[in-house]
Image (cartoon, rainbow, N blue to C red; front, side, top):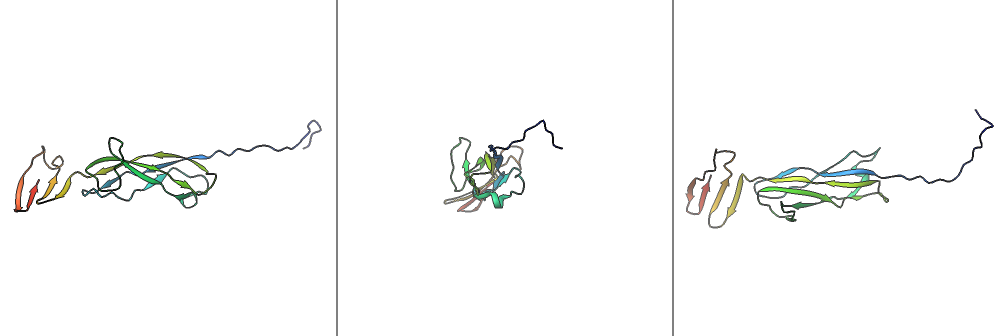
Length: 150
């Protein structure tokens, strides 16, 4: 229906598309007793429409591992304990980017139950909290060059 009471006119306007927020979360993981750092992974919050990792992410993210003093511990072997996995530097495929990135850290736990050290002796140290009611140390000589400490 057309009405004679209105004049319709068209003009140029501005359309602003605001990027959606995409959360990049480092997945919690563990490292074995030798302290070798695992391959780090991440999870993204839900993409919009037909987007997926394959068409949104060009590269990254990069993971930085921080100790309890927020000091970067690098990529080498780690002592037993808990560390923070901090993701950053995810590069989006599209320019301008379709998402505003928000990073969330994960937790890296390095198992303290078994620590190996070598010198003139080889010691196997097991954290007794899980096996014994109180921390006990028992030494048994396997050979003159090796000691087993439980």
